[in-house]
Amino acid sequence: MIDKKFERNVFKMFISNILIVLSGVISGFILPNILGVTGYGYYKIFNLYTTYIVFCDLGLANGIYLLFGGYSFGTLPKEKFRLYFKVLCIIQLFFAIAFIMISISFMKGEYIFIFLMLGLFLIVNNISNYFEKISIAIGEFDALSLRNTLKSFMSLIIVLLLWLLKILNVNLVLYRAYVVLFFGVYLILSVQYCIFYKSISFGKSVSFKKERANIFKAFKVGCMLLVADMIANLILTIDRQFVSILFDINIYSIYSFAYSMLKIIVIAISAISTVLYPSLKRMNKTEIKNSYTKTLIVIMIIAFISQLAYYPLCLIVIYFLPNYIAALNIFRVLFPSITINIIISMIIINHYKALQKQNLYFVITSIVLAISVILNVLAYMVTHKPIGFSIASVITMVVWYLISDYYISREYNITNFKELIFMMVNILGYYIISFKVQNYYWGFIFNALFIIFVCLIFYKNQTLKLFFGKKKGI
Image (cartoon, rainbow, N blue to C red; front, side, top):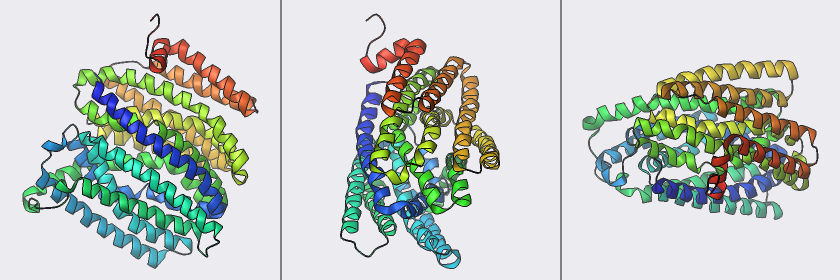
């Protein structure tokens, strides 16, 4: 059963996530104006590849996450963890040198700078990711919320600094300046984490020979989850990969901007995902089974209500970012994909991890990736336009949900057909209203009424309890 501690941790993460959202909204709408369409496109290319460099830890962080999920900080074997940190740093240094050599030897134009910075960035990013995994595994959400708060404030500062550089007409390539400052933020965050966790980072450690078996075990159990996560990440970014290859940098910039707006919604409600895994690890199988459908319903209600954000975000783009108006058609098509992504990443994947089903998770993501590639190729053959990839992305997310939920439901011996109908009704309703009602103000009102009506028809008690803390009749 989900207890008060779970609720407190969700609240902590929600508050820190709100700060990230605020900084994300400000930087997300100011940064494209500062960098311009071309500069923003190059920054988003860099940002796209940063989603892959987390895999340069070879699964060590994931292995520790799986093996020590449910522990408390006081019960961690500190001398062993100091060795794990040393191993992580050596691996990151090796990959950083490799990236820098590739940049110098094989890249051309702006990609020299992009890959050079990726080599430096992977060190600080993966150190931060390592400690973030530990924080989630042991339920140390104070460290995580502190990091999120620091990141939010520093992100705002560097955007303001970039804005000042543009006003002063300083002779700099602004997207490069932003990438360097972005690296600086993560450098500070990684140092902050090392200081916060100094007792498991520095000092006397056990010998590698003595701990070798456990290190290889961490790599082994983490590697499958690492590969599965990498494939899942490819599923989420494959359309952008196609657009970056097949179209020029300006079109890619417009397409990526649509995703940047979607990311704001994900961050806003991702607190539950962060807290859920360590809470599931402390449950027995019966409790995990009972929690699945309940949390699935709650996240579905929240996710589909979040679709209303489509309308104010569109208005912000129209009034403040006219150069990116072309992104709105893509944004409209993509929006339901992010609500399904929220359901998969926050609920379903955490249950696969809690049940130690990372091998099955790997198989499912591999199948979905193959389907995604086929759908994206067909989309390009039919449309020859970026919006075709958006349609393929939405279909892929629906397929991913169907397959992932099928195996979890079979494991728990339950049926979630009602939840599937609820999802499809909301998606179809959103598309009909957003395409038919061109006025954004009326579209918001009609969509809000539709979502409230559907939520009350399908899940009246859960909806009333979620927003008013009470059930029907009370």
